[in-house]
Amino acid sequence: MLIRRLKENAIELIHIEPVEAELLRQIPVVCESGGDGRSEARLFTNPVDSSDTQFLTDWAEYVRPELRHLFLSSRNTVKEDLEKLSDGPGRLGRLVVPRVHSDAWLNALNQARLILATKFNFSDRELSMHETPKWFSRRDLVLQQINFYAEIQERIIDAIEDQ
Amino acid sequence: MAETVVETKVETSLGTPWNVVVHDDPVNLMSYVTMVFQRVFGFSKQKAQHHMLEVHHKGRSVVWTGARERAEFYVQQLHGFLLLATLEKAE
Image 1 (spheres, rainbow over the protein chains, first blue to last red):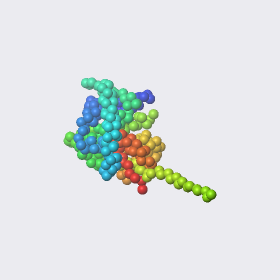
Image 2 (cartoon, each protein chain N blue to C red):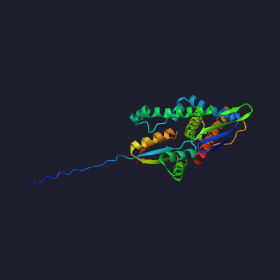
Image 3 (cartoon, rainbow over the protein chains, first blue to last red):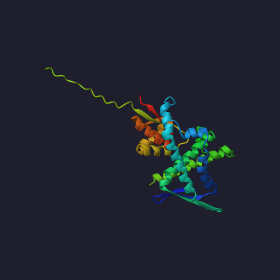
């Protein structure tokens, strides 16, 4: 897969292999499935220590719903963009992401990576490893998925900074 | 008749300054954190990278200090980008 800037207003993902297309389609799925307590705690972290209970209560009441809405909106944008992914049997896929959707993509990719890293309990060391293992366990595959999403984030940042 | 002079002492309290602290997180990419600092605080790329590297090497960086309300706003923005950020009283 190659990610590049397309004119001024879009980012283009081309030569998308079937497995990559599947991983892309998994972004909103992972985000939506990540409702366990630890993932939730990572997505919605406390802004102060636990002694400031009144502030934490206000934060939970007023700020957290706004954050939740932002995260939901980002993954819905990604989901809608992915419906336009053109691929099929025997051919590589192509997807055009409007430049104004790049923040939503970065956000949804981050949500997916945080949820997977929390769910599978990856250590800092594991997350910084980029070698391809010889044998794939389920955990190894998830780590590859996290790294694949990180690579897309890097390429999107490159593409928007290039403008 | 003696003139009474009333002195009024005006004190302007700006309150305790608060720090916005960003903490290290193995998931957020260095390039992403740099980009977020540029967006949220309007930092130059060089300054944003300086703070990003401080987070990476020291585990935390004070990225802004000032009034509590503004600090809360910045922390909310940073949480929107999924960075680990907290508020603490400046010493």
